[in-house]
Amino acid sequence: MTVNQSKKKVSLGESLVQMQIITAEQLLDAQKTQQENGGKLSEILVSMGFIRDEELATFLSIMWNVPLIDLKTHIIQPEALALIPEDMARKHTLIPLHIVGDSLVVVMADPDDYIAIGDIFTRTNMKIQVAFANAVDIRRTIDIYYRSNEEIQEKVKEFIPASGEQETSADFATETPITESLDLLIEQAIRDRASDIHLEPQGSRLRVRYRIDGILQETNSLPIRAHTELTSRIKILAEMDVTRSKQPQDGQFSMKIGERNIDIRVATTDTIYGERITLRLLDKSLSLFTLPELGFLPETLKKYKKLLEYPFGMILVGGPTGSGKTTTLYTSINEIDRDKYNIMTIEDPVEYEFENISQSQLEPKLGITFASGLRAMLRQDPDVILVGEIRDKETAITAVQAALTGHLVFSSIHANDTVSMMSRLIDLGVEPALVSSTLIALVSQRMVRRICTNCRTTAVPTVVEQEIYMREIGQELPMVYKGTGCHLCANTGYRGRIGVFEMLVVSEEIQKKLINRAGIGELREQAIHEGIYSMKRDGLIKVREGITTFEEVMGSVFTLG
Image (tube, rainbow, N blue to C red):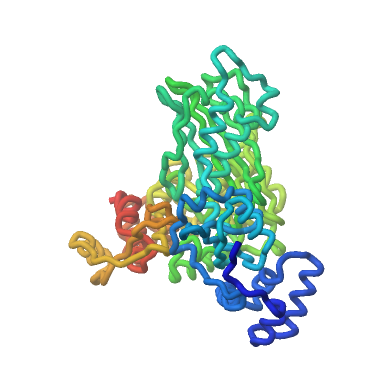
């Protein structure tokens, strides 16, 4: 076994102090934290802000005399990956990079871990060459490269019963190939940042698709005989009726994937090939976005933050299903002082839990609807109210009355744009005068995919793109950006999503037009006259800044006409 590194002569902390990268006092503080809570000194120094991750990585590379590897720019060799099992890679925080002759190059978070190096040598019987990368990059690369597809296929073969055999409910409740297969499907979906899993029975196979960044992608194709067992397992977990297959059912259950708590909402419906199941994945461990992270441009953000300080009135967020309305509502109320104000919500369902906010969930079987829940809430002396969605006349009128009587009300509504949202309220039966006196702002939004920053490159805009940009923005577009595809974005060129917004603050002129029952066209003309930032304009600015592409904006926003 050979390792291209030299033994450290002094500790990491002492070396950092000697190089004047941190102070002696900072080292003592970090060591005290380490004694109290455990953990690695290097990670503690970074978390306490005494040193940047990149700075520490460069220092450690020099200190250990090993090459520093940027895993975002390297492709892991499949033959190398096959030599080290996932559990070993996670245990020691390492990833095999490639094979060079009779040597295996391994990227480690701790190149001084001789126990790990010994384990690799024993397993592979190869010379080991060590490189270095920080632990966060290694864990992310493990998530990307160690995929569960082949393991799922093997597990499925184990649990598909021979003809005539039948599993019992007890089999589903224990750690069997059935449960392991489902766990692997969900675990891989979480690694891939999927929001939903679709299990779709076809004529001869069970198609498995994940929705990633808003796009459905087929990830697995299982034998059709796996469908019954997986369906039964999911129904038992979600406390659904296993014997009912024709009627749609809803349920939910929770799982822990590593350190992440995942809530899973289950919905079934019958098809000609059997029950189709959709699993919605809600990661409770993810922190909420901030308003800038959602995609509000600086000018819009400044106006929106001022609106959150209003003592009463209604702020509506609109858009189709999957456009990020709930995230915007959550982020908005998260900006409000929870110690100073009584904040209450009625939701369907409660997707994320907040400290110091009273959250309620719809229970239609018990008579708890948006309208009845809101009426009950008004007797609890709230300052700020979030109503998950305005769907009917009763909810709309109750929400408007709450806004009229001194409450700041947030809610969502299905409509194409901000002007249509006002019209939608009136269509639901709210008097135009009440809409005029309660609405303070409307936000309409869509979601577009972000260009992967790891493989982003520039390109010359086409003639059509230049014409569209000139027409909407009034100037030439110097260049556009696109992702060429890499392992970080699964060769899609996109990674993550961001909002495209249109915000309309209800002015006195718009209030007058509402009272006079002006049509959508007249209201839109007034909004344009007042300088509204349309979603088209917002999206094209994000194109210019290299955040997203013309294709994304054209597909999600320009379809509005």
